[in-house]
Length: 353
Image 1 (cartoon, helix red, strand yellow):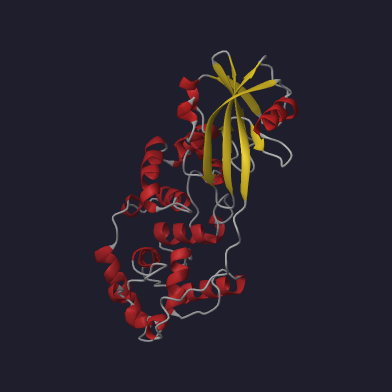
Image 2: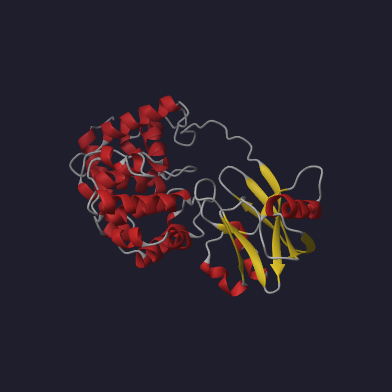
């Protein structure tokens, strides 16, 4: 670092103290609130996640309330944020902390990482922000900042580079104010050292930046080219019997675990939508399904793939289900849909039923 670590720390924290956004989890050192915010803001924009954070905290204001809830209630409160394994891990961790840790968070990063859903980054954030432990953190924003500060030309998503970035994060850390330092680095990456068109002339640590000195700020960091995202065509059977619709609960473990959904499956190359609907009835539900009209065609993107949902109304001649494709089935009326946590893709057509 060209002009010394002490001057870098002073410039960074002076800027952060004056310019930091007033976010609700920054008004407290309560480890529960910090843990919740860190888990919730993973893969979620702050402007999108903040209302969820405030609603979740109102519903589950402390660790004990969360631990005493049902998993379904937690998933329902999480509904719309995606990555539902985060919510299941929150629930499991709350129960473990209540049962085994007397309702208190451990302070060391090593102990925190033993809890479900808490990795190296989250453990460092909780330890440094809530307890003042001098430990670094490394998220996407900080990776970008460090790659430019030190002019790293290697792809930042390679394991060797990741190890190097953790070393640089530790070497750059302000051990006197570790929590503020880590948040300042994240803030810098989110607002100034942005991915495209970094605002270098507004940067408080510009004079310390090797990429800026070499006019490399617009080309760094380097990343490995992304793979093509797969796309799946799926059919969804909205099966009615009298005034109720059939929904199934997905297994707790795995993709969209614990959520409720209308039965569906990928459309095979050799079949059309109506053939797929009949197959779902016969093979998945052991139920005779009569396809009806198209409700909607819904497109939705997950992290690793995209789907197009062809949603059809169907009828069933009986209500008895014989299937292990879901852990539980229920016949429910539309006025009770809001009691169940559904995947985000389903919310795009629920109001049409």
